[in-house]
Image (cartoon, rainbow, N blue to C red; front, side, top):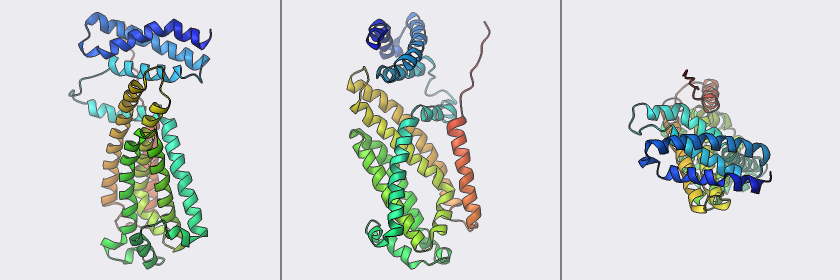
Length: 318
């Protein structure tokens, strides 16, 4: 069976499921039963499409339709106690994994730009200095090896605070600018990768790299991951406009926006944790090795949560 024949054969039930999803809030009992049946059918169709036509865009369409149907079939009242906790425990890690390709693309854009700027700063620091704000550059040059913690508290964290405050702003811009056919998100990720890479390289050149990373490490794993997730959400928005599925471009964008907003909601949760760590651990008088080790631990916990938290399957006996 060709992909065209497959789509023609199944299109009727897909359209019916689309219609039921649009009126699910006012659906009667028999319609809800039908919705559950069609949900099971479409998950089977999705499995066939992934196996036989993995490169066709019908796979993306079916995946989105199955995701919407799952959310409707298993939805709970937004005011129900524990709904937010359920999302944070299982929903956010799940939507993170479902959109991992977009998040990895976001990570690669930032990391390649960072690496290029970092190496450039090591080889040609004069050029890298032109990429960094004057206030930050002045602070770097005033510090010598080991001088970071000898300056007043309001000054010694200026550089790292600039980096991390900037990251929070970048996370929200990376999401919102995705609506510009991904161009805005790509620009934000690359530009800030260059900026942060240049700062890190200049710190290395001036002998204060260890002090910088010991401050950044405790909360940096979480905040940088948040940037990549927000960037992935923005890229999903833009991609829905560039390559819509079998749905209209408008409906594809609406569906992508629902997923992207869930990703951003999880980012807010992560930023609260990162902000707490930044306020109490990062500027503390703990030794550099302890701070760096603490940061590595937060990274392990974070990725165990994102990749390991899965909702248990409940088996019911008849």
